[in-house]
Length: 65
Image 1 (cartoon, rainbow, N blue to C red):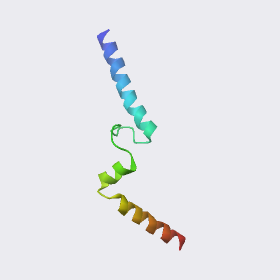
Image 2: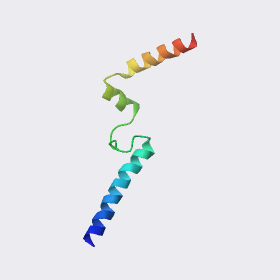
Image 3: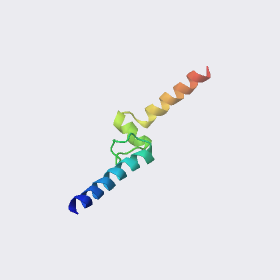
Image 4: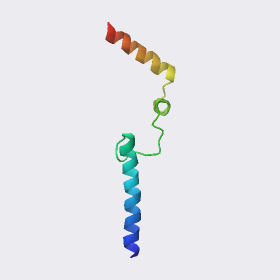
């Protein structure tokens, strides 16, 4: 009975982990608690929002040419 309860609890934890990641559109085994906002992704890459906006403006200008 203890092993069944342990299996159910571990299954729920693993299912929640995978389900949250699928809901966020991340890879299945990534950390579901990481900051997935634009600001968080820019901080992880070491860029600032100003740099990202400048790069995106340059990309738009190049695509319009």
